[in-house]
Picture 1 (cartoon, helix red, strand yellow):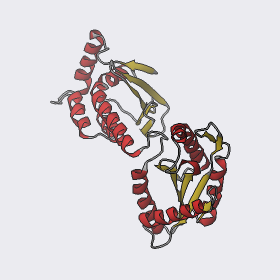
Picture 2 (cartoon, helix red, strand yellow; picture 1 turned 180 degrees about the vertical axis):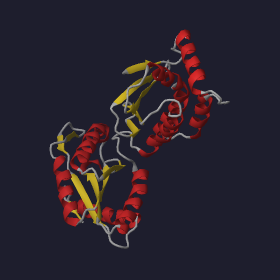
Picture 3 (cartoon, helix red, strand yellow; picture 1 turned 90 degrees about the horizontal axis):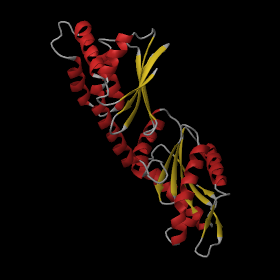
Picture 4 (cartoon, helix red, strand yellow; picture 1 turned 180 degrees about the horizontal axis):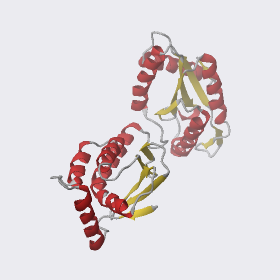
Length: 303
């Protein structure tokens, strides 16, 4: 079942019915109204997963639940705290201001009408904390995501690279990075090339992600420059991935100031982690390798 829940959309009769159900069945002897408890508890976090956990914990005291899930396609969020369940009920959280996504309650047996009425009533305290959490999520994402390509930015890359290096050393696994540059978009690129490069770079970013493994992390490091962190990858494996990425750009073209077609080519600098590497030293070696590829004319892989 999917129901749209709008702010102040319950009829007075339904609201009164829900209030009577809650007072008669759920809160006998309880001095504090559960909606107030929810409101207070949900103000304690801006993390969506934490909000779901708090909401599930409180609501389960009056309606037995096995799990809860939250989906927001616009924000690309899917969060779940759930066991296997054969029954579910879902509510679209639509207010007069915005669409906050959908929340789904799960359990092993059917929900009664009375329980559904209680759940609908208890959704109200979730609206404002969830909206705040979505705004926080968007702000955090904006701080770490390149708006043009949708990839992580340089700050996100540096933080993650240090973490990946520590993990690789701890588990005695190889690690490699690729510094990938579009040859025609260097510092002296023409205005026409820079202007149209947005579409080309977005397309290229999607191709790099598609050709990488799920365990790899791809970042837009600078304009026309990407970086790939290849976990559990030795020199041979890194070269295979680098070649695949380089070849993916061969059918992309740019137009220069004279309207001449210019094929897009990539130079790739490769560096494989040693036992003494830090993030800075590994990046430095990849940068030097990329410089070597440029000196040799570009459109090649160098390490």
